[in-house]
Length: 125
Figure 1 (cartoon, rainbow, N blue to C red):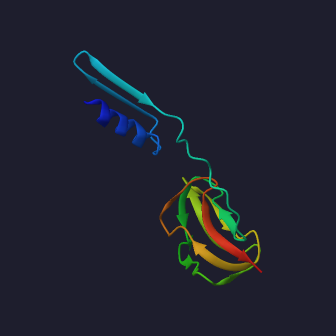
Figure 2 (figure 1 turned 135 degrees about the vertical axis):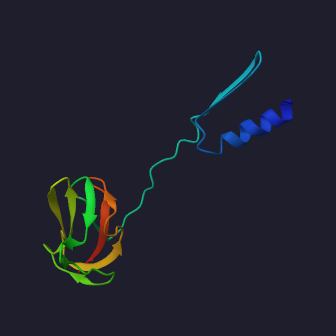
């Protein structure tokens, strides 16, 4: 690899989130590691409130025979049940923490949910 190509590659690597690359061929080796491109967490604010998963499991929009119909822009009240997360044989209800309008639905029936994962976003009244 010529010096110009190597210099161009190193300059490019500093503009990416590349952390480490190791290249070995015969007796030659190249090891590049850059920390200059470590991404910072996004800094933003929002008036929307997240409704987070209460457990790890599978999200269900309701119990058998009692599906809860939810849609974006529908009004919700504090304490409304928005579904449940099923873990083995137990389940934890997903409950609206505030009253307002349901603005974003981030999960559908049958999808896996992680603990603390935002499932819905509500715009407060």
